[in-house]
Amino acid sequence: MSPTVPAENPEDLFVGIDVGGTNVKLGVVDDQGRVIADTFFPTEQQKGPRYAIEMACSRVHQLLDECGLEYTRVRRLGLGTPGPMDIPAGLILNPSNLPGWRQFPVRQTLSEVADRPVTFANDAAAAAFGEYWVGAGAGFTSLVLFTLGTGVGGGIIVDDVSIDGAHSHGAEIGHVRIDSRAEARVCSCGMLGHLEAYASATAVVARTADYLAAGKESVLADQPSLTPLLIAEAASGGDSLALEVVMETADYLADGIACLAHVIDPGVVLIGGAMNFGGLKTELGRDFLARIKSGVRENTFAMVAENLVIEFAQLGSGAGFVGAAGLARRDFWRSQQGASTGS
Image (cartoon, rainbow, N blue to C red):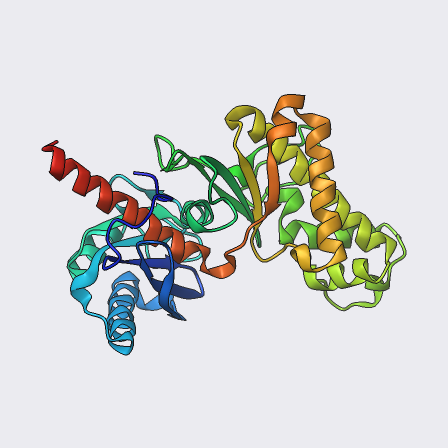
């Protein structure tokens, strides 16, 4: 069942939980993707995964009580966590930002505590599904989401299916190789030339620092430390080096998008995450997006480029829990269809 069909039952509720290294975000979502209530709390990863799971379930009950809603209306939960993971087994394996969560049966544990079935997903894939369901990708049958933050993450959705791969490592779009030179930049994973090494927030700061060390003039030279926000502000103020870095970032992203466009031929590509240079609200953000579109047109087949929509994502920090709830909804209705057909 497509997540974009009209609500089957307006009484049905779904819970989405998005686990991050700093915070756990969660929300109660109805069958049409409307957020009924949401909240967050510190992950406190040193206390372990069971603490976070029990806290999340407690907060869900609290939200429902505040809204005057019964827990019996919650049909299924969706859970998004960072990788690496084993999605079929429901295991979170060895996440770098959650060192105390190794080899943990997170799906089964949440299901037991919540007394509901759970759909388990990569956090970036969940965010992609959120945009596909009720965000900037609504109405498309296929979508690629790039999330620009400390790294470059993302998700790929095709006909309601998250492309997770045979080993739960699908859609690692930040590790598409865009530079094959021996002197290519080193990615956080240790390999050379990956998109993340050029287009992440970490990379934007590192590339700017390299230019400054090489003697390029900029108002940023007086800053004791650099951040993407400072670079964006300098670029908006007319600083030539900062603007060069932002536009180069757009060019690198265009290379990555062109690669995936030829493999997947999606209907829409969305740019999300914390580093969007102001998005559509600023001239810099609009110029950044226009530069991406121009680069993609130059490097893809004409038919692919002409029909590919490239825009900023819409759901912001709520995309993860909304998408997790959407994946739970999808699986719930699939189970209902299976029950009605006897399959």
